[in-house]
Length: 450
View (spheres, one colour):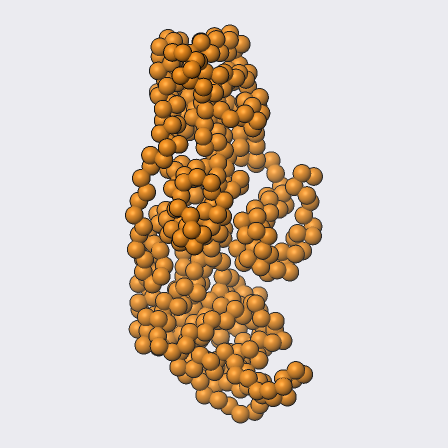
């Protein structure tokens, strides 16, 4: 083969100098541009500075192994193929190499013909992938405006149907970002009250001094600045549904007032002694364990029993692994349409990484990640190297099990902040803490390189 036919760049990694010399000479004669490295650390330095089409690596090397290098490449370099060679050929070794991401596996000794054939096959696969020879699957349907087909989410769908057929109070529980408001809306709009207002209230987002006025309204002159009477959220929701999100953030004094509303369907505007009847269905939600709050004396047990007539627990995304590809396609299509871009396709490896990630921010965090990928993607294909760095493997750090809990927490906080473009309120919601706690943690965090 003439050098004019091949300009692909190959990196050979082997701790045996003789092997490096032979492979470099033979592959160069075939027209490839060849780099060499005696160990994984040196190989990664070359990869960081030079575009490489194919890495040929030995399996067993001192320090970091060839398998670690394969995984590092798969999760950091989307346009690089990998081929494993070894003098310790076993079936298990071949299986592990392929599972980790090597496209080809050669046992020493091998002929030049076997080498050149394996190299060509690996590079042809790379070229096919670059050309986008991956068919996109059809977008799935949805139910109640929610995407999912897994058993845990189907159980939620069943609970929505049952709750919609009654007027009973509903308590929705689940981690931040699981979709508690979506479930509340589904209940309301599937019920006989669907033509009446649905009023969502974030109890944790309203200062305690203003919450009573916001919920029940106030009369003119009730407090400084009350220049006119104004109805509250309960009056606005009359005949419909009020959704009290983060109800666990309310004070004990406010909980007493909410208990009266639940018991008597009555409210009293701030600054007035006149009782008003309201016809409102209450749906409440919390991302905290209310029973533990009761044991700590910061949530009223009688209010909990009034709220807990029907309970719907929304599973975290990590328990809905089968729904992750459906959600990815849904968000990808939505944001591609919003930004006027073609919907990118995801490689199987990228999908697997996304499925294996813990998703502390659940569906909301996944949506943020997909939005960022759609905005930042330059091509029509997303692979593992395009994903946020916290989701990718690094051979230089391994599992990094030598870090303290404080260091792990600080890194996760930084990664969440990066995923929401520094928006502290969104980051605090994903992390399951309030803004004040987040500010305190940021103030005590060391710089990442210190």
